[in-house]
Length: 74
Image (cartoon, rainbow, N blue to C red; front, side, top):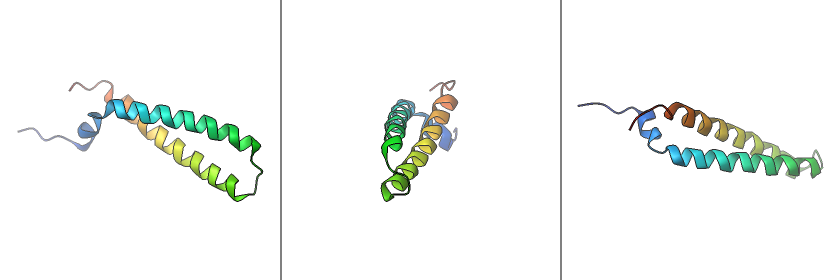
C-alpha cells in the first residue's frame, strides 16, 4: 500500500495552480499600474501595497507548484 504525500495530493490540482498563477500575474500588473496613480501615504496606497505583496507570494507558490508537478506522472 503506497502512501501519498501532501505534495502528490496538491499535484492533482496542477491546472488550478496554473489558473491561480495567471490571475495573480494579471492582478499584479493591474495593481502595479494603479500604484503609480495612487497618492503615497494614503490608506489606499497601503492596502494596494499589501495586496501586491500577497499576490506575489501566492503567485510564487503557484509557480513553484506548477514547476514541481510538471515532471510528475499521475
